[in-house]
Image (cartoon, rainbow, N blue to C red; front, side, top):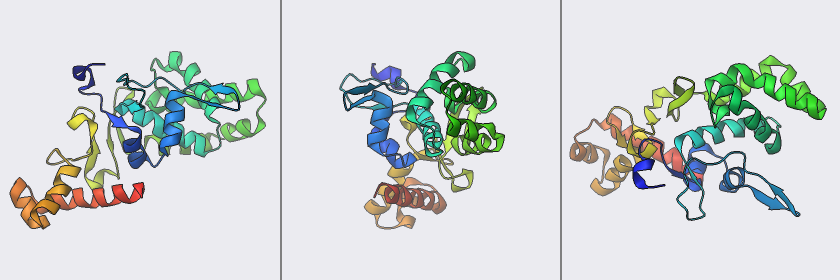
Length: 227
């Protein structure tokens, strides 16, 4: 994939995705590249949108949102293999390569999981998805603070809209930005270190101190998640 193809889709390493989502890099790599254990090969849950031909895992914004959604199902007790089967079944129905993170899956996903559970006679899975409330709660966590264009995610308010930090794949390759200025949070936070204070950083970048403070608050929590 050439550089121009990366514009507007977002670009994240597995480590960046871990810091944003709290999902370990080892899981992200297994889910997106597949793995082998005890002589058994497990396929990737889906094919990543970005391939830079260097054997590393990269995620687009859509991949990031799909990992977020997949993680919620797996945390609820669904196996990665079952999640993969649900993705395969849902692709045609939803008409999207990454269906879990779409609004359409919110309405049709429960039926798909029930079909899988019945076919495999998986009582635990059946019990989980027979309850509409349980499925709705998983989807609520998957799609929380996400804005959509059509059925697909468009931008993500990382810590809620009130925090003022958004990820938009059309801006700064999808890096977290302070939404009123459009400046990456890392840039504003680093300015505080360079200038020596929030006030001086705000003056240097000609923005309000609240914009700098938002970025600093986010970056502090961001790095805290990575620790």
